Amino acid sequence: MPSTLNISLTDEQKGWLNSRKESGGFASTSDVVRDLIRTEQEQEKQVLLNQFRKMEADGSNEAEPAAEILALVKKIKKGRRAA
Amino acid sequence: MQPKPRVILDSSVVVSGIGWRGGDARKVLTLLAAGGFQSFRTPWLTAEWVETVQFVAETERRWKNSNWMNWLEWLKRSSKLADDIPIKKTVKRDPTDDPVVMAAVAVRAAFLVTTDGDLLDLKKPYGVACLSPREFLAGILRQD
Figure (tube, each protein chain N blue to C red):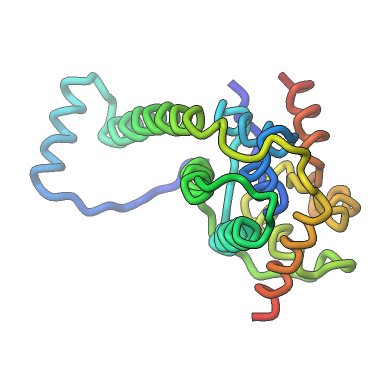
């Protein structure tokens, strides 16, 4: 469900949004902002995928010691709850 | 297009996925990178991810990933941030697991992926399906 967010803009930024609305054929400045967010999200997705690909070879290729890992994780969880 | 399922990754999966590249936990992270599901986190869960990965990286002699800080940054950027909600007692066998269940409730997650038997035995607390990485991957692939 859409929610409303009030943001403060400079006159220059507001003017830019209005100009973008007109030139891009958007129905409202909200549509412009939503389009900017979508574009930024797509770019970020690609950046994160590229970063992941560079890191894919990191880590051990041995079988993971699952029980030992879980015991260590539980130890941290216990310490955090006690704090 | 149907939205991708909302998922909480327990610290056990995060540690395994970052530290060991051949297991199902790493496959879960690979699926996240490919946009196969939406990962969510809360401030509590984020701090727990960081503490557990750091602790295991520093204490487990079989840990081989010296790049773990970049992995954590990648995971944080890949996971949407939501607010924590008050913790209710849910996991009788191990109350230290309550915060991760509450994180799943807070973000209205469909799945909580974990290797922790105490969580897996809960099956579906508050409607959140607790699944092992293998069960989760099988379920997602079936959906696709």
